[in-house]
Length: 219
Image: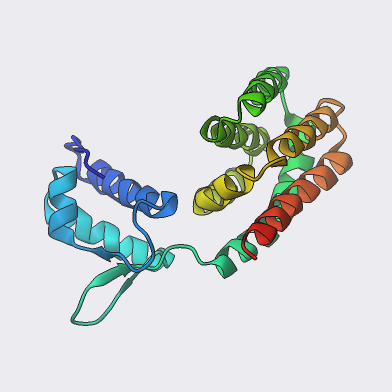
């Protein structure tokens, strides 16, 4: 990882260390089977071993790492089965989020979506995968926030984090970025028309398409 965390407050420090290690696992910097050594991570982050130990315990509760008794802690990561389960649940929850968002989305939200779609179109032509992944994240974040539901927002944001690598794999597939843009444009139009039923159907189909595309790539 190689970066220093300069936070004095203990609670903030614990959170920072946890989020940093968690993101490294979800982004693939730490891969399944890698050993997590408290002393090494503490040195890399410029902190003591205590917040690292606490972060590892929390990651174990999430199932992202596994402690082997009397031995070491290894990265469990996200399995293919986990990804499939997440996409199934996410399609239902995000469909519900889109229905709620259609009732509550603001003109400012819609304007931001328009800007994201314009940038997406630009980066599709340049095939800039990292930019497209970031824009995809922002597009869905607008839907989550527009629901004004803390529960939905929290759950869906977590799911989005868990499948970072899967999303990048999917959007890297030739032809898929243009399909994503077209699907996002349809969702935007449904939200703009305040058509919750259509927005829900289009979002569910969009998530299913992502999962289907990923399944083909993993064959």
